Amino acid sequence: MTSARPALPSAFAGGGGSTGFSPAFQAVQADVATFIAQGGGMSFDSPDTPLSADGAALRARLAAQALGGTELGNGAVSGAVDGNGIDGDAQQQFLATIRPHAEVAAARLGVSPDIVAAHAALESGWGQRPLRNGTADSNNLFGIKAGSGWQGDVAANVTTEYEHGTPVKKVEKFRSYPDQASAFRDYADLLASNPRYQKALNAGDDAHAFASGLARGGYATDPAYVQKLSKLASRIARTDY
Image (cartoon, rainbow, N blue to C red; front, side, top):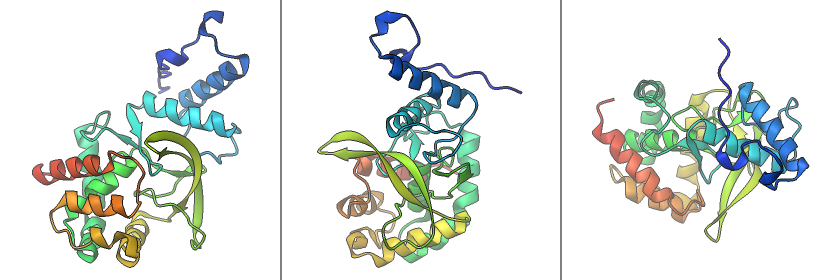
């Protein structure tokens, strides 16, 4: 069954010369609309989508709006904290799938599995907005970037970083994993071994303390990150998933 083409935000809707947009911008808009309508992913480095960095950033923004999500500072595109755009069944399925991995990672970090699950849900949009490696899922549920010491596969994606409180589009390299279990192991290793995140460890059920420790360590640049993660963790803890 062919899916209907998603409506573009009004600011980018097609029209006559009164829009004031340049022909080049309108061409990018048309490319992005076609890309989304054809069900494309959000990877910047896909050979089938040769957009410029600006075009890729616009593509990501329109895709997020078409899917009802909001972009997060660490590169993932997530639904709102209350799961806007992601139905309850999808949320439950995601939590059930990652639960064994979350429990192992949580035990190492000294926090509740609900907190780890919330972190994965926030960064990946309940698994519905994954970072992609070409056309494949990178399994990077936590938006972890590939620094100079990373020896594994890499996925380049458009991300939103906050500089002095202002969102800025960038293309960053992220770690890519063969499966979710590998992603959770690397996530736990990173937080447990990096001195920057020591304040996040052994927080137990205190989601705010965990999120604050991540923020102080520079895990994300979104100024609302602590609030988003704390609220989602609290909701997951209260809900019988």
